[in-house]
Length: 353
Image (cartoon, rainbow, N blue to C red):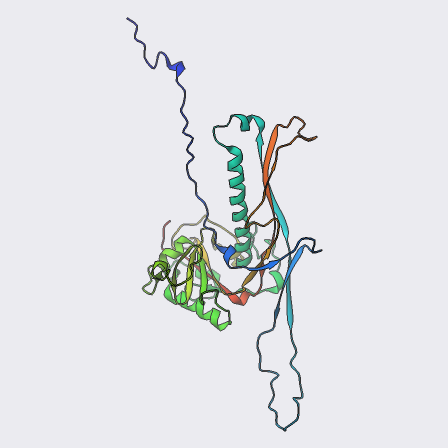
């Protein structure tokens, strides 16, 4: 007698798809909080944003008034520094066919809107990070990736967790390259010596990767954010404090690998191991004071709240209206306002993550 089974009648079976989408990794982006925001109004007649700073306090022109009723012989001159940089327009487009929109199990258009917003935030955070570190992801030399000088002839304030000043010797095989209490204190002290003002809350900010943070949190002087969150303002991503610096977790941090040239510190790389050995990742922690860098505050095309443009109507290039596009555009730049007001501290980590 014939036996009917799921195998003999397999044609009636189909794959079942759950409509529940799995979560995916999203970057923890924090640098948008600390930029000095300056409006760039529409119809302003400029594609560049400019910020200004006067010279620092000085006693060089103060005189002793030796004779009563006699005015000083000299006068105090003012110096005004203008910092300008052109904004660059960036954007992307996702294309969807009419057949896909009509038959897809998931809402691809809705997901395209979400992805565009997340991509915009990551792109602008990356540009800001690169400007602060002094590099471009695509290049190996200085900010523009082509060996040209930094903006405004800037000199970055760079420090190393082992206390040295030479990037090449910092790469030696040693366990002394991790972030230590002494390294943090050196960075905070450097900020104070440079007269960098603390950010809101009266403390400096240190944006760093989870790997470096794992080393910092093992220091005895570390104070978890939960222990003071009821009395002090918390930044997005804030984890805790030590020596007057609030540490912020930043998953889009900078890493490089030294090979043969000091310019390697300006070449982004994630190919090294998570150890303290030679050739391992060298990660940059950015200690920030007030007005260290500036960003435009736009009424339109802002990456803080990007407008996703959806085009779903026919035109000469798509006469049958077969394509729907979802995209965004931003108009953006980052200016180093005062490199003395932040420190790039490079370290390795004991974390194997």
